[in-house]
Each structure stands twice: as C-alpha cells, then as structure tokens.
Image (cartoon, rainbow, N blue to C red):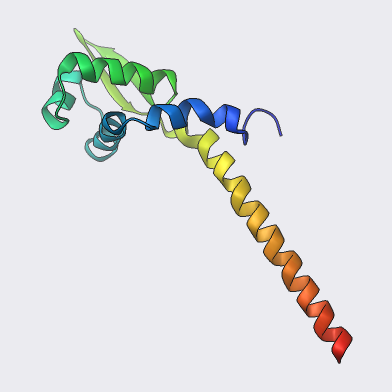
Length: 115
C-alpha cells in the first residue's frame, strides 16, 4: 500500500489539526483565500507571531503553502495536504463496505438455500 493510507502518513496532518487555532487558520484560508500573516491575524484572534508559528506547523504538515510577495508571505491551503488523511479514512469505509457486501452475499445465499 506504500506510505499513503497508513496512520504514519496521516499522523503529521492529524497532529497539526489537533490544535483549534490551526484549524481556525486553515478554515480561514479555505474560506477567504490566500492571505498574509497580517490579514490572518485580523481574522483569527491570536497575535501575528502566533499566527506565524501555527503556519509553520501547518506548512510542515503539508496543509498550507506560501509564496513570497514583497516583504511578506502569502499563505494558501495546499489542496493535496489532506490526501494522506483522506486515504487513511477511506480504508475504514472500504472495510465497512466490504463487510456489508459479504453480509449481503451470505444473506442471499441463505435465502436461496431456504427456497
């Protein structure tokens, strides 16, 4: 299965999202689009230095990317950032659907056996 689809691949993203301020920053970027630290600090109730530290964590987890623009950086959500978590969670759905399909097959076989 490779590294994707494993908890190990998803863990850095889950850890980064474990903080409510980081979730608020990510949600603000998702809703408002690319933003500077100053603009984010006006929308999320923490200081600019705190925003910068949270953005570093989100960046290391692959959830945000940035580009230099003049003397500041513009941050945006990295659309691929949740891929590892999505693939890890999809395993649960796949297992549940497989179990359901097995149940349906057994039930149909039992019904045919009674006919």
